[in-house]
Image 1 (spheres, rainbow, N blue to C red):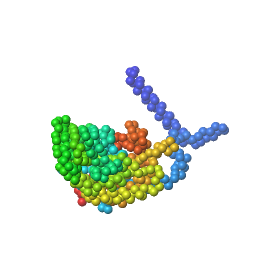
Image 2: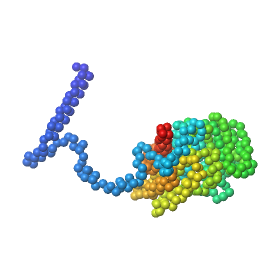
Image 3: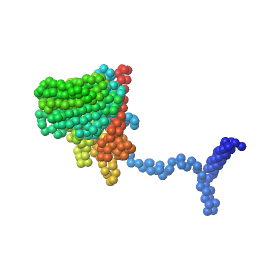
Image 4: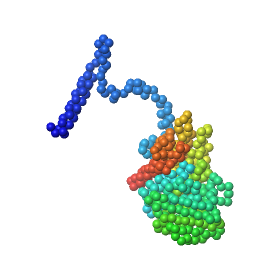
Length: 455
């Protein structure tokens, strides 16, 4: 007999034997329990593993529902588990209309976003993924406005940036009231032998610089020198002005630009890499910033920046530098100050949409385990209240991360999504949150499109 036929017959024999055994056990399950002398035969139930454990059911009925009620109360708006939706607290529920109307015309003009934050977003974390996503959908080439000097320049991946011999002033460090602060909260002064160079990052939409804008203020006579793609140096004299001005360099396929300036009367506010159309996201992160320092920005100067940059959405990410284990006020003092700041900004930017992000999760060591700092949910609640009182949009980043104790999961992920300080994200973690925020923005844009196309 051929080998294949013998193997087939053995397989059939095994299947028949298994069928007979299962059928026998099934028939025995109909027999009641039997006791003969000291011998006791329990009732046979081959499906016993599929039945619920009565003891487990008894425990379920004793669950403390108080904890569940507290969790439900923390989440004001129930959302789908895969999408944390934006909550709009404006009176007409159209806080994001300026942004979305602009997106509809992104093929003809720029749509600019200012992303203000603390160290949680430095290095273009979160904002880089939002930029990349929106540029893929609506177009745009370039990373937007970046600093002349930055201590985390090497950490940023969206642009290659080297520099030397620049003085940096900020909202948190400057003691000189004669130096105006730029919209990012920073101002840069060139020193002797200064130099700064930029090269594109690896993102497809940022591989070439077509348009470069240098934002400055000049109280006297000064000259800037620049070289494109390692070519010959070109000089340009700045006009004298007490207001914010821009110097524009246009060159197709720009792979690098190097600049130096005479340390005379020039103040620099940053340099922007862009095109004439599409979406641009300016990352304005500042370490140790609670958001309250934004009140130090000059409204008049902000209007000058907006005349040039024309922002359609301002995103605010703060709170980590305020939350602490010792605050017993539930951050009522912080709420009042931030509400005033946002209302003042709305007056300066009347045709701009505003979106406040909640605080992220932050871990603390409790009896050897990393758990959510108790002040974080309180801060998140206060930030939702800030958005309500300001009449702007709100996005729950704490919930988007996964809620309580999510930062521990981010840190322990392979590869890590958060740093060992159980506070800051890695670039991968920033991309994950950036994807969720981009999804939320696009979800609202689609609703806006449907509503306006189907009146």
